[in-house]
Structure formats: structure tokens, C-alpha cells
Amino acid sequence: MPTLRLAFGELTVTVDLRDTPTARAVLEALPFEATAQIWGEEVYFTAPLQGLVREFDARDVVELGEVAVWVEGSAIALGYGRTPVSRGDEIRLVAPVNILGRAREDLRALAAVRDGDPVRVERGD
Image (spheres, rainbow, N blue to C red):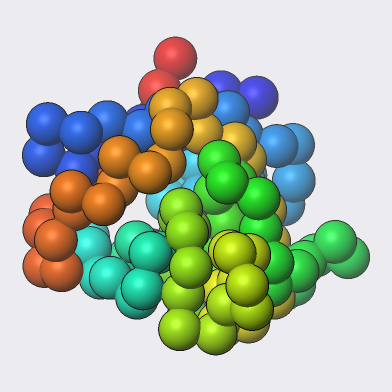
């Protein structure tokens, strides 16, 4: 699978995509721009995705480095720490999400992203 490039200003995240219907749908929607939103230690943004359903392995607790798609919100989500619904030190998102892939970079760098920052999403290598 190709990679996905998420550019938050000077901060770039490269995502190694899984071979899933969700990843293929994101690739078909490229390129697009969005606006970052912050929820605890999560950055998410809406994506032009339609008709997606939760995959069999959708879950609401993700590992550091996993990049997800929140189907109901048509959003790509990058959790890097606690959110308002986390229990303990887990990275818990608002609802079960489809895992899109894994970031090559340490997602804790996303702490520098601010609500309203622009994000550009395009195909990587």
C-alpha cells in the first residue's frame, strides 16, 4: 500500500497504510485540506469520506502511533495521549474507529498543533 502524508504546517506525519476498505477510500479522496480540531491529546479533522462502515476490528482504544478513521464523524483521528474519555493512561477515542495505518513519526509531536490549524492530506511515496 502507498503511504499517506499529513502536513500540519511544518510538521509532517507519514502514515503506512493498512490494506483495508477504509484506507482505499481515503486514497480515493486525496488530496484534500482540512482544519485541525483538538480533543484532549488527540488531533482530528474531517475528511471527504462517504459510505464507510466500521470494520470488524474497529476499537475505541488505540496504541500510540495508530492513525484512525472515525466513521460516524467522517474524520481522521490521531491520538497521542489522554482524551476526556480515557481511563488511566490509555488513548481512548470518542467511539470505535477503523485503524487506517501507523505513523512513522512519534505522534506526541502533535502537541504543537493548535485548534484551527490547516492540514493538507496527500499521497506519500
